[in-house]
Picture (cartoon, rainbow, N blue to C red):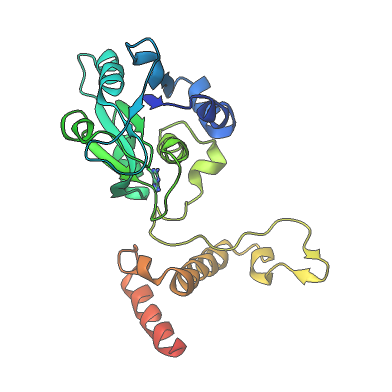
Length: 243
Ligand code: 6GU
């Protein structure tokens, strides 16, 4: 996979991509991340990337020409998705991450909240993504979130132990509680079942904890969660018990 990122602040982006799972994926050749400074695609002497809004109003608007020039320089014979990161986009979640993980090449454009000339949206962009209902100063942090969530899906990106672990959200449930040594820390004990060595019992306990936790914290997730008929019945009973 190749991910191109267009930004006005390239320095914001390099750090997170040179650490941990993303770095390993890059080193293994699973993904190539190329960062472009939009300012390098200006053609005027002062390298102007933004201008006043027609019609007046607050803030500046990103000009269409540099973004267009950058996108055109990247496009090739393959189909490339052009994704604008903006609070007006569709909400990013695990399903969208899985969708993007199927692409071989994409361009992420980091917008700025004052706005991007609407013609970029209309004629260059094929998708718009927001990472949540709050306003960031720019799309850079959102691009990092998207890249992380997408890259960790690529086959071979995770180590063996990480891969078998069932992540929150892939099953539609939150994760069960985890413990490590010591068995007793400041008098606080690890649940007995985890020390029992009974793997079937442990799996059952974890599944139950996931369901309870999801019910308490994110009941909205349960509608679409992957639950058996029995689990649905237990859940209905728990819901009634809680009321
Ligand atoms: Cl993608 N960009 C900005 N500027 N703010 C956001 C966002 C994106 N997603 C949530 N808030």
